[in-house]
Image 1 (cartoon, rainbow, N blue to C red):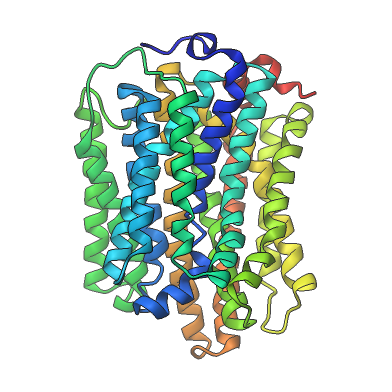
Image 2 (image 1 turned 45 degrees about the vertical axis):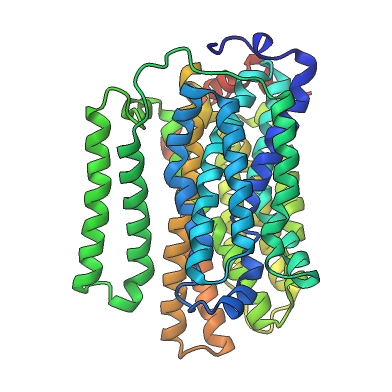
Length: 486
């Protein structure tokens, strides 16, 4: 069955329940990118991770998630979006169980990678299900706004929920919590989510392309992580870097020679899609600075427990949701470009504020203003990013467009975390070691670089994005009436 009108895919009265189910799944997969952050000290102690390898608990998930998202989007177009959605939830839930019973660093990192594969099947299918099920107009605007709020706010909720679970139970529960949620989502999906496929299903899977892009991205991240240890100009670093470039270059060549490539490179001729994905990489690269280093700041410098650390990030969740709601009204008044650039600019100010933290900074005067500004900025940016990343492409390309957008989020977060961790470690070493002042100097240096990434994103949007194109792309994603918000 090919995808056509939303009315043919599901009765109108059912679309709201469909949105609830796919947003629940998206919340679960986004949550897992950050829920482990507050559990890292406990995981490190229990499984004997080295300090340099600890970040792979986060990055193994994010890299495989990002590396296979495009294959997941294409598979959804070919085999059916509900089918991939259900398969992804099943893999994700099983991997969560394996995470919880891990007894060694290698076992946990491997299970996290499998969890990322499940997420890579779920996420693009979720966004495609919304765009092929919800009627055009204000209803789709609200549905995409909810999806954007989940995508932006799930990470912040992960810190709070993770803190509660680690403090009240154990680190294993940050993974066990996925079992009842995954099983419930699976049962609901089988009942209420309609099946849809691309009308043109010629070709097949580009497994070679997926393998090359994932291997290249993982190797690039590993190179960045190890550059401080090996030396930036050492033969090992340069050799690894050249290997990563070769793999990514081979991926590009394969894409131009396959009849059904993983990424049809011509899709980047849609300017709004290309700009949205570039801005998303930069936004996520900077945003994860706060999640990772903020968690370490509260636990290693302030001596807070996991729950107290999670509570410290509660305003971020509220701020992202508030920003997402406000953005839907601001879009009608100011247009996509102004809201997106403004959101990235506000987020930049938030991270710049964080550069002033010291070991003695108070929560209200030191941390809170920065986190509120960053959260409002992220919330304002995510809705227009979601709209222009999926608007302006043919219905049969929705899986690819969704996969690209989600890939940008995960790859941006993984590469950003690798870069910022390396920068922070270098700054800490340069400041004299592992004392509180040196550690905070490393964190604030990472915040400064993160602010630079968001500022660069704002510049890309301001210089390259055309207001008329952006508004037209958003209208295509949500229906012409969608820019008039009641």
